[in-house]
Image 1 (cartoon, rainbow, N blue to C red):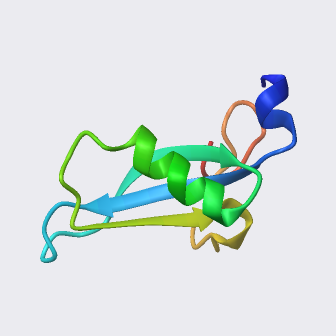
Image 2 (image 1 turned 90 degrees about the vertical axis):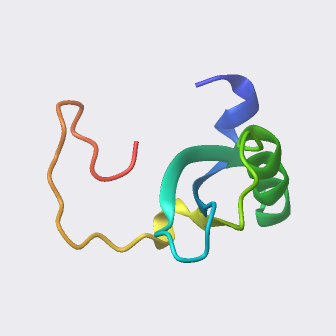
Length: 77
């Protein structure tokens, strides 16, 4: 992890192109607060004309089914 992201929180990014499509997980951004996470998500994932985009603070994601991966971490990477 770079020194720039060490003091940042992780936000997962979801978006959809059309309102009748499900939200798709695009990835994550590292940011010190919600406003910066929104700006970072817009800049990072601007390749499509999204109808809707959302960022979710990673600790707020509630696992429904959980399986440990090889590194011992759970859930989103």
